[in-house]
Image (cartoon, rainbow, N blue to C red; front, side, top):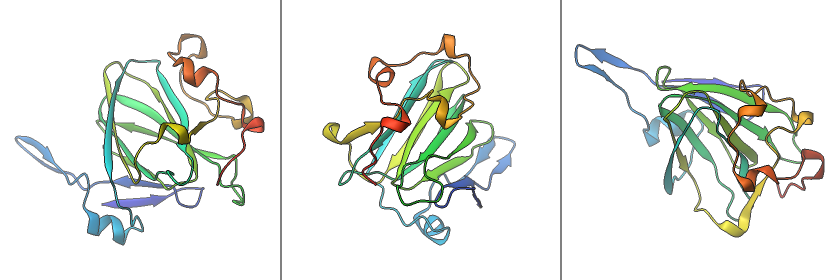
Length: 182
């Protein structure tokens, strides 16, 4: 597997080693030992999956401590633009983001430790998104930032007028009004 660092410390892009043959292909989507060698010493406690249509945006979300989560995400079918925004107050990259296109074709994975709000824009219908998390979900610990806050400068790759957004995500605070617990 190939691990690529990003401009923001802690965020990693993982490219698994693919073994193709006449039947299709095989790859390890997770191997604790190899991920530990890559610097991801995470204890995953829950796997989540969503199915979304083109134009859907989910995020930007996180869980506040003590329920903060690290996430290892990937796409099983379709394609997304996946985004992590640094909300670690003492970080030199506070408020900056990394965006990665994840698809069933490229098989990339994106690792984000606790301290980031996360979201994704769906670029193809019937996209299946999968993520492993390091802590259990707690409704009272939900936090987030408005996905299209212009101050974040995220180019989502979709038409803002045709997005599918949950009512909960539409009322998240702008980044300037967000108080980070990290």
